Image 1 (cartoon, one colour):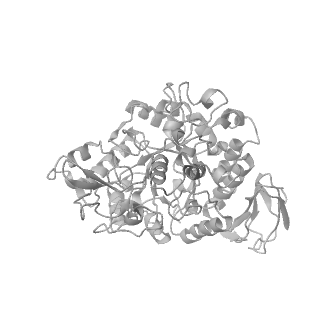
Image 2 (tube, helix red, strand yellow):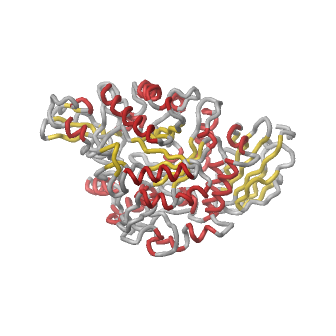
Image 3 (spheres, helix red, strand yellow):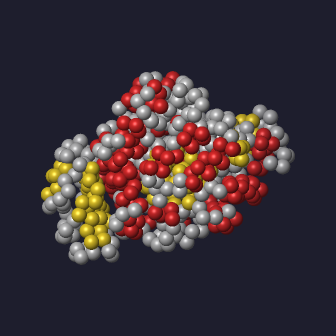
Amino acid sequence: MKRAWWKESVVYQIYPRSFCDSNGDGVGDLPGILSKLDYVRDLGVDVIWLSPVYQSPNDDNGYDISDYQAIMAEFGTMADFDALLAGAHERGLKIVMDLVVNHTSDEHAWFVESRSSKDNPKRDWYIWREPKNGGFPNNWGSAFSGPAWELDGQTGMYYLHCFSKKQPDLNWDNPAVRDAVFDMMTWWCEKGIDGFRMDVISMISKPDGLPDVPMNPGQLYGDAMTGTCNGPHVHEYLQEMNRRVLSKYDLITVGETAGVTIDEARRYANDQGTELSMVFQFEHVGLDGGLADKWCTNKIALPALKENLNKWQKELEGRAWNSLFFCNHDQPRVVSRLGDNSPASAKCIATMIHMMQGTPYVYQGEELGMTNCPFPSIEAYRDLETVNAYYELTAAGLREGDELLAAFARKSRDNARTPMQWDGSENAGFTTGTPWIMVNPNYKTINAAAQESDPDSVLNYYRALIRLRRNSQWTEAIRDNGFTLLSPEDARIFAYLRPGKNAALLTVCNLSPEAVDYALPPEVPQGDWTPVLLAGAPPALTEILHLEPWQAGVWGINATASM
């Protein structure tokens, strides 16, 4: 495959609202991020992905943008952003902006004009439809509960919002919309940013006629995402974006592509570079979902997880590039979801995902082993998706409140959005004021200050893991080698080989709370395997490898072995 700097990078995602508050108002901000750049640099990562910092009424925590070329007042000013960008570049860090262009805020000037009258020049910048049989234009439901259509009293027509009613969908079929978006992107590139993470980019091209979608039992509405993902012109529009903007700069681009298939991913992230650098696919983090919705307490079965990740490793190899992640601002903490909240399970899971081929993403606090938060009631939640689901499903008699709270404890997005745990002082050192969302009470034992000088901490393990990927004798093998899954049916061990011409790597992870004696399968070549990185595992690789709960190890071998 072609070489590219982003294939050798590690990305660190910052959720600005919850990272570091510099002025005591309880909300994280850009000066707060600037004050922590040395911490991010010392982690060893190359790129910072910022969740949205644009001007926004904040209905969906910044993913409802009212001005793409202004900064949300809570976060600071454009001068603060410029200082952050300069400070990052001085430290060798790149900045990726969150590009949210499937929709805007209903307070964006474009939509204010669009809804003002049926003959406004910007009317067709959004998706408007007449009522159908006196009701909604189709059966689509919003990802945040309720219908995906809102009746506008001024013109008597419905507008489409696949998310909040304050997030109307743009009409990408209109060339003027694409022109405006590409001009805005160029403005940010000229400012010096280093890439874009593209929010729900697979949804920008809506199907002709906006047909109804199938519904599962227990659903009040059909899934709008099913109806809109990977639409008829999405690749055409992304190729146009690439020609007009992306190809003119040395960028990293990753598309959030819900509903993506292997074949579609090969097109989005093709190695010819005509669209994006890579995509986020979500099959592996949806393996614990329910039939009607994600609100359940299911656990991810390890054989199913291995099968899925193996598919993406094998099917994209040599043709497109993988992104490697479990955590982000929309996903609960993986140490609570797949692990047991322990430092050992945090290290084990990190080893498993980081040693695959692709670009790893670390979400703030993941490098500390931050866990899901014990929110005491629905009133403690702030996430629009969570709160809306609670009241809609209980009012409809489809769920009991206690049942939903148990599901939220595992699955709510707010689990990822509690404040970064910097130290053991009040509010975890995040703010001197009242935090916008509760701080996880375990901050006194799980925090950056406590882990800084502990050689056995999760933080220092992440630093070693990132060094291994970026600057070691095994860097090339981690980047370029193939992938061979071992023991696919084993319900406790996740093991795989990374075979290559010059060296091979073996990763074995005991993803269970039980000790395991793992017999190395015959696919593992004989030879002098050297310990590369150990999370409690024994240094010597023996035919029967004994692993205590949540232990993991990586071993390497040179090309003299018979592979």
